[in-house]
Image (cartoon, rainbow, N blue to C red; front, side, top):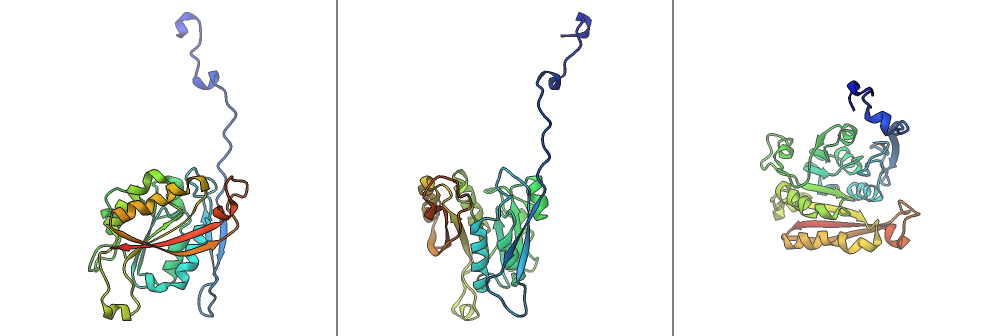
Length: 253
């Protein structure tokens, strides 16, 4: 209604009144303590996490802790080589790889300001062209590709399975070590996929990731199971399932 009709123009906030939005929670810091202690190296890592986020970047997930321990025990997978982490969040696995001698580590997450500011690196949407990621590798690399790709607690996102696998297809090195290079401790380029069935009634949907991977020509092998206190004790579903982290290694067939 116009002013000429004797009424003032009403703004939306005067019609639909709401209480002030509370400020976003402050970032938190969680400490990861190394299980494998040595006399001449690091013992713990402080991980900064966003205060709250709809993409769950405000948690240090059990899969991430299991990943860190696995990478600490298996440096032959990444030492002197190139590593890519998708959906990094707090990026604990990548930090462990970097501290233990990976040549190049690229951290990515969904290009949302809060997430990217937190890892202070690079935004990337799964399934999109990987050239911006490959450009971050050293210029003298024989092949512009990654030797290890880390997927930590991502496969619960069922609609994105194909996009994740497409990215991995394009970004993982096709190099296969010779017998001589195996003697030097190198392993074949691989994906490491760690996860928990946070929703036990949808575990079969989580596992569709590996069905789709096999259809694309990946060899899939479970390499680890490890139990932690469940992330959300009040959630429904069998606690034993929600407390277990699974780790898989995927290589090209």
